[in-house]
Image (cartoon, rainbow, N blue to C red; front, side):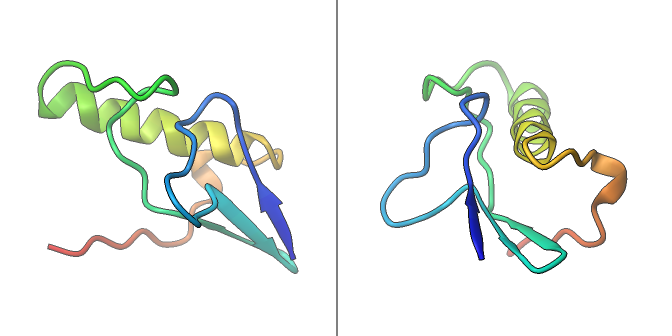
Amino acid sequence: MKIIFSEKAPKPVGPYSQAVKANRFLFVSGQLGIDPEGNVKGDIEDQTEQCILNIKSILEKEGLTLKNVVKSYSIS
Protein backbone atom coordinates (compact mmCIF):
# COMPACT_ATOMS: atom_id res chain seq x y z
CA MET A 1 0.00 0.00 0.00
CA LYS A 2 1.26 3.50 -0.90
CA ILE A 3 -0.11 6.91 0.15
CA ILE A 4 -0.38 9.38 -2.76
CA PHE A 5 -0.03 13.14 -2.28
CA SER A 6 -0.10 15.96 -4.84
CA GLU A 7 0.82 19.56 -4.04
CA LYS A 8 -1.55 20.55 -6.89
CA ALA A 9 -4.61 19.40 -4.91
CA PRO A 10 -5.87 20.54 -1.48
CA LYS A 11 -4.15 19.03 1.53
CA PRO A 12 -6.26 16.39 3.27
CA VAL A 13 -8.03 17.50 6.43
CA GLY A 14 -7.79 15.17 9.38
CA PRO A 15 -6.59 11.58 9.10
CA TYR A 16 -7.31 11.30 5.38
CA SER A 17 -5.16 10.77 2.30
CA GLN A 18 -5.73 12.21 -1.16
CA ALA A 19 -5.35 8.70 -2.53
CA VAL A 20 -4.08 5.24 -1.67
CA LYS A 21 -2.51 2.84 -4.14
CA ALA A 22 -3.12 -0.82 -3.36
CA ASN A 23 -1.69 -3.32 -5.81
CA ARG A 24 -2.79 -2.07 -9.24
CA PHE A 25 -5.67 0.07 -7.92
CA LEU A 26 -5.67 3.74 -6.98
CA PHE A 27 -8.42 4.81 -4.59
CA VAL A 28 -8.90 8.59 -4.69
CA SER A 29 -10.72 10.24 -1.80
CA GLY A 30 -13.64 12.57 -2.33
CA GLN A 31 -12.53 15.99 -3.49
CA LEU A 32 -14.14 19.38 -2.95
CA GLY A 33 -14.23 22.40 -5.22
CA ILE A 34 -11.43 24.14 -3.38
CA ASP A 35 -8.03 25.04 -4.80
CA PRO A 36 -4.72 23.80 -3.35
CA GLU A 37 -4.55 26.86 -1.07
CA GLY A 38 -7.96 26.04 0.41
CA ASN A 39 -9.93 28.78 -1.37
CA VAL A 40 -13.46 28.34 -2.72
CA LYS A 41 -14.09 30.39 -5.84
CA GLY A 42 -17.05 31.05 -8.10
CA ASP A 43 -20.30 29.19 -8.50
CA ILE A 44 -21.12 25.48 -8.59
CA GLU A 45 -19.77 25.15 -12.14
CA ASP A 46 -16.40 26.67 -11.14
CA GLN A 47 -16.23 24.50 -8.03
CA THR A 48 -17.08 21.36 -10.03
CA GLU A 49 -14.29 22.17 -12.47
CA GLN A 50 -11.87 22.65 -9.56
CA CYS A 51 -12.93 19.30 -8.10
CA ILE A 52 -12.13 17.55 -11.39
CA LEU A 53 -8.78 19.39 -11.61
CA ASN A 54 -7.97 18.15 -8.08
CA ILE A 55 -8.73 14.56 -9.06
CA LYS A 56 -6.72 14.94 -12.27
CA SER A 57 -3.70 16.23 -10.29
CA ILE A 58 -3.82 13.27 -7.92
CA LEU A 59 -4.09 10.79 -10.80
CA GLU A 60 -1.14 12.43 -12.56
CA LYS A 61 1.11 11.66 -9.54
CA GLU A 62 0.84 8.01 -10.58
CA GLY A 63 1.00 8.59 -14.34
CA LEU A 64 -2.77 8.22 -14.78
CA THR A 65 -5.46 10.35 -16.45
CA LEU A 66 -9.22 10.75 -16.13
CA LYS A 67 -9.51 8.05 -18.82
CA ASN A 68 -8.21 5.55 -16.24
CA VAL A 69 -11.16 6.19 -13.89
CA VAL A 70 -13.32 3.09 -13.62
CA LYS A 71 -15.98 4.30 -11.22
CA SER A 72 -17.03 7.41 -9.38
CA TYR A 73 -19.50 7.47 -6.53
CA SER A 74 -21.56 10.23 -5.01
CA ILE A 75 -23.62 10.26 -1.84
CA SER A 76 -26.65 12.48 -2.18
